[in-house]
Image 1 (tube, rainbow, N blue to C red):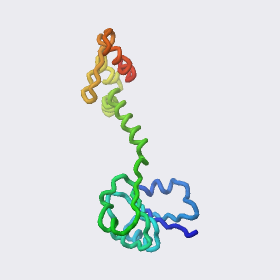
Image 2 (image 1 turned 120 degrees about the vertical axis):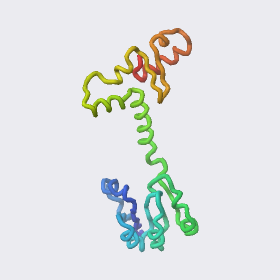
Image 3 (image 1 turned 135 degrees about the horizontal axis):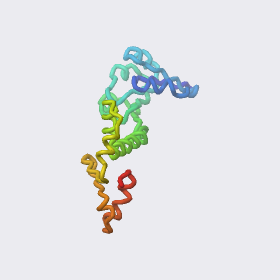
Image 4 (image 1 turned 120 degrees about the horizontal axis):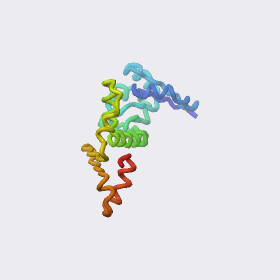
Length: 177
């Protein structure tokens, strides 16, 4: 079986590449940091891994054996150019590779907003270690968090209406009483 030669020309991927386990013996990965070295290494390469942020035209054209062009990012618009489409090279991307970390980050930001973490960070920068501003802001059981439109009120939570029976668990889940 012939060994596959892959050029990794994506600066942001190089840190991760060095932390990964070595590829199988049938694959030779050559990390390149400059366009010049990538052009030299492409001469006998089957695969080019790059970002979808830009199209390395000189690197692409230097690979007569190129069979696969892989974008390590989701966006591929710059790679959808006439040269690639007419070449017959298979074009792939890393769609979904970051789905879980992005979702976790989004949920973390929402929780940070509901707990007013930004106010605590602001107090820390001022080296103010008294009772947190967020606790003062929440005093009295009322939260009026404009960015995320969550409003809870103890009196309303105690009400026996159907809507407040449904709101109470949501408010308590975010730490509102």
